Amino acid sequence: MEFADAVTADPGGPVSRILSPFDQTPVGEVPLTGDDALARAFTTASAAQKDWETSPLRDRAQILERFAGLLIDHRDDLLDLIGQETGKNRASALEEFADAVLWTHHVARRGPALLRERRLPGAFPVLTRTVARHVPKGVVGVITPWDYPLTLPVSDSVPALMAGNAVILKPDSQTPLTAALALGLLREAGLPHDLMQIVVGPGRRLGGPIVERSDFLMFTGSTATGRELATRCAERLIGFSAELGGKNPLLVLADADLSRAVPGAVHACFSNSGQLCISIERIYVHESVWEPFVEGLVTRTRALRLAAGTGWEADMGSLAGAGQLRKVVEAVDDARAKGATVLTGGRPRPDLGPYFYEPTVLTDVRPGMRVHHEETFGPVVSLYRVGSDEEAVDAADDSDYGLNASVWSQHRGEWAARRLHTGTVNINEGYGATWGSHAAPMGGFKASGLGRRHGDEGILKYTEAQTIAAQSLVPIAGPSRLSHRAWARMLTTGVRILRRLR
Image (cartoon, rainbow, N blue to C red):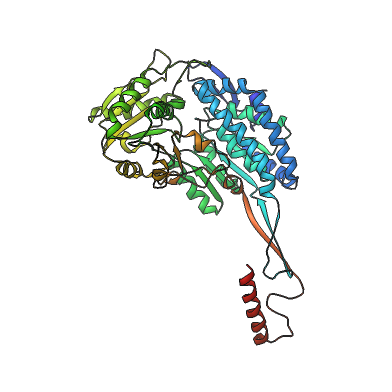
């Protein structure tokens, strides 16, 4: 498909040229969305939504199932494009491909039963017929970042569509091509053309107008931007859901199986070059297993294969761009200058590509260093030695963030998990167990977000709950022929009976 066909823009306007982080070669071009085109996108999407919300739930589900099948049929095209747009290694691209397919299938399977109209107990048995409905919000604005250009647009758009909404998607300006390919496949699966549209341009220009025109906003990105968007949504009294930053901890308890914990930690820290909101940046290790864990972690980290390209050989790819590389370099240099010890890594690798950086393990990290409390969002992890499992839990919780956590233990994983204030906790896994549990909610505590994706919450948040109750024979206020006293006696008797029955 032509990527431009999936973007709402005016003919003859400016275009954005997408360059690969691997080597700065061109990947494709997309037109930029102007003010008039943005307004037109919302107008036409709103019109399409009016018909869509009356369509049968089973018909919507069938379109999504066909879309999941088309994703599978185009797997290699998607993996190639993801790698070219982001610089990530192919194995990391595969993770988001699998997530997009399985979550779409889950929504298609679960959506019809979850969203159907339900008869519920009424105020008076027999006399009150009460029905609960899930009414779509209308036009949902979805703003996604560059790190997962397939699964984030899909994860947020698919349930909104299933719930009867239209979607205006603004992918990051650096990675619009993967989203455009996904939209093309959705339309091939039968989605009405105007129902979901992509707009492309800087967030500082399009973000405000999207908030002003949307009936609900879903955002994935930084906590600072999330706060700003939440304020704008609050002013309009529209719903807002966000997955924001994380400074995610991993705990290696005294009884951890290091043969699993070491490779698990390496994957959790350096998948997608550490550019994953649920990846690990802090590791707390019980002193009884400190030496063998650190030795194993450093050895395996040094053995990681860094490479450019879309082949399967790389264990880690490039950072996404110059800004991300600069942020990582400055954070590590700051830590080193203030006394941190670099056990491995700590250097850019321009010999591999312009934005490569070695996977880096630090110790002796203290408060006052940027890597101690700020999200680095790169291949950098800090190790902390603790004297007890309790100390590990307390230290892990000492953060403004609360997105994801990982606990490695043979017997005390559940104990630790229930004491951590994070939206997801993985036991003997880094992040994949909760991320892949699509029937369960996923999201952050504290400064890591509002609302949830995945689970029933990830579908229902795109709806308004409506209750319709029809009263027969006897009004709630009582028959007009009865006195207030007589009705009070009858109502009290009825309340006693209902209390026993319910």
